Image 1 (cartoon, helix red, strand yellow):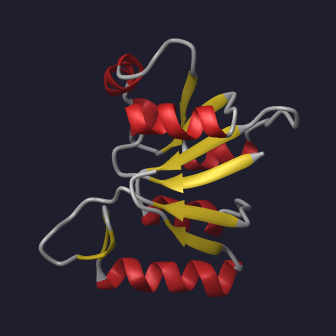
Image 2 (cartoon, helix red, strand yellow):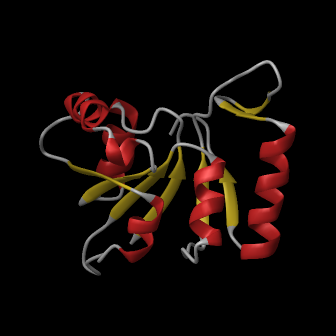
Length: 142
């Protein structure tokens, strides 16, 4: 099973405690081009969670070619919608994505608790739904 999620905080206690326990996640994969090259930041994220969980940081292209083991459950986390869009445009496949814990900003509005989107985000979400036939779910906190 693969659970795709947008979370601007990427890896944090709520991710591990809720998602990994609820869905028996074998590995967390963080998909972000910049972070895949930044070993110092990766260490920071790894230190924020228990050693019992495997975390891997890979580029968008590498995530498409990644050799997923069918028996394992994966939580695949994107920092933002631009990464999701790039993943899909590069022929990545997903049926559903959960959007939660996105950053607030002056040009964004809150659609549910903890989920803020801008006009550009809204356009990207509609594009993802319509062009790639991806079910988009907004989920507060967890």
